[in-house]
Amino acid sequence: MNALLSLIVVLVLGALAYVGGSVEGLRTLFGVIIPYAAILTFLVGVAYRVVRWALSPVPFRITTTCGQQKSLPWMKAGYLESPYTTLGVTLRMALEVLLFRSLFRNTKAELRSGPQLVYGENKYLWLAALAFHWSFLIIFLRHLRFFMQPVPAFVNLLSDADGFFQIGAPVLYLTDVFILAALGYLLWRRFRDPQVRYISLFTDYFALFLLIGLAGSGVLMRYFFRPDIVAVKELALGLVTFTPAVPVQVGGLFFVHLFLLSLLIAYFPFSKLMHFAGVFLSPTRNLANNNRAKRHVNPWDYPVKVHTYAEWEEEFHDKIKAAGLPMEKE
Amino acid sequence: MRDKGLIFAGLVFFLVLITFPVWYDLAAGTTSKGPDPKLPTAEKDCVAPVEYMRTSHMDLLLSWRDQVVRQDRLTYKAFDGKTYDMRLTGTCLKCHTNKEEFCDRCHAYAGVAPYCWECHIDPALAQRSRG
Image (cartoon, rainbow over all chains, first blue to last red; front, side, top):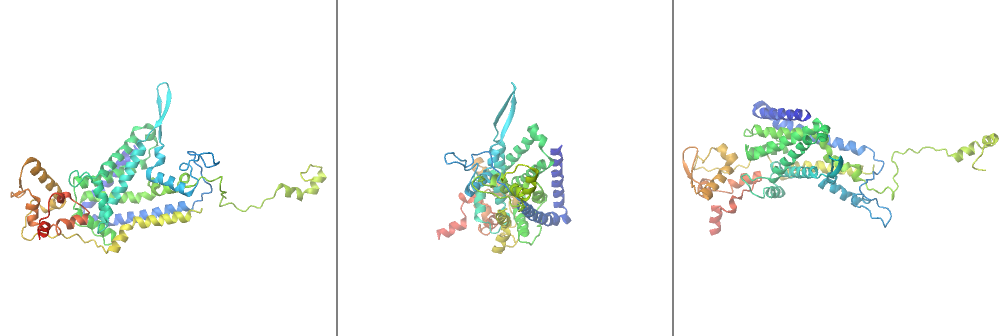
C-alpha cells in the first residue's frame, strides 16, 4: 500500500511536470521558479539541520563493541574498529563514508528445517548501496557540463571514462546502467523480504521512486527521446548565472526530469536523505574511544555545592554525642 | 561540544562546494549565450530536417557507418527524396566546411567528445598540414 501510494504520487507529479512543460504560461514556473525555490530550500534546510545537530550536546564518548579498545601494551587494539587517535577516527570515518563499512557487516537470519536458525553474510545491500551512491556521485559530477562554461577538464575526463566502451551514440554511460540496476535491487529488496516490507514506510518508497523517476527520465532523454542539448544547457547556465530563461526548444520530458530533481533536493532537509550530512555526525563513528586514557567532563555539569558526611558530623557533633550515637571521627 | 568549529567549517565548505558552478561561471564571465555554430550559406537543405539533426545526428551517422562498413550500402535516400553518398567528410563536411566552427563549437559547449575523428580526418586540417 505504501509502495503503491508513493508510486502514484511520483507518477502524478511527473505527469504534472510533463503537462506544465507544454503549457506556455507554466514553463517559467517549472523551469525557473520551482528550481530556484528548491535550491533555496535545500541550502537553508541543510544548514538549519546541521546547525541544530551541532548545537546538541555530546557529553560522552560512545564506545563501540566491534573492536578491542586500546588498553595494556600486550593487548592488540583494533585501531580502525575502536580507534584511539584522531587519525584512527578519520580513517574509520573515511571507511564509513566512502565504502559503507557498517553495511558490510549486514547479516541475515534464516530459519531452516530442523528447526535450525542460521546466520549468514548478506553483502547485497552493501553492494547495491555502493553501486547506487557512487554512480549517483559520478552522474552528479558529469552533469556539471551543463552548469559550467567552459566545461572543466575533469568533467570531460569523467564522461570519457564513464563512456569508455563507446557503445552506441551517444555513448552508453556505465553509471546509467549501474544506478538503475542498483535502484531496482533496492526496491525489490523491500518487496521481497516480509520483515523489510513490514518496516518500509511511505517515505522509503517515495525516495526510491523519486530517484528511479529521476534516473529513468534522464536515461530516456539521453538514449531515446533526446531534447535539444544546447537549449538545455542554455537553460541551466541561465539558472546558474541568475539570468534565467526557458528556451522554446526544451520539451516535456526534460521538465519531468527537472521537476523530479527539484522535488528531490527540496525534499532533502525534511527526510532521511539528510544522512549525507548526518553520517559525519554519527557518535559511534566519529568519537575516539579514549575514555580510559582521557578524562571527559560532562560539559553541562553544574558546580553543585556538596555537604559531605564528615562536614555533617562536624556540624552536629555535640548533638550526636549527646544522643550516644557512634561517630566515625572519634 | 568542542567539535562545533569543525562542524561549522564543514558546513561552510559544503555550501561553497555545492555552489561551485556559480563561482566558476562568475569567474569565467559566463553568460547563458549558446555556442552559435557557423551554418553553411551555400546550401539550404540537409539530409534530414533541422530538428532531427539537432537532437539525433549521431544516430544517423552511426547508422551510416554501419550500412557502409558492414552492409556495403553507399547511398542514402533523404526525407525529401534526394540521394546522398553516406560519407562524413565527403557529404557532411562538403557543406559544413569548417569542423572547428560547426562540429566543435556545439560539442565543446555540451562537453561531448565524439570519436568520429579517431578514424576520419578533418579535410581543412589535412590541407593545413600539407602546407
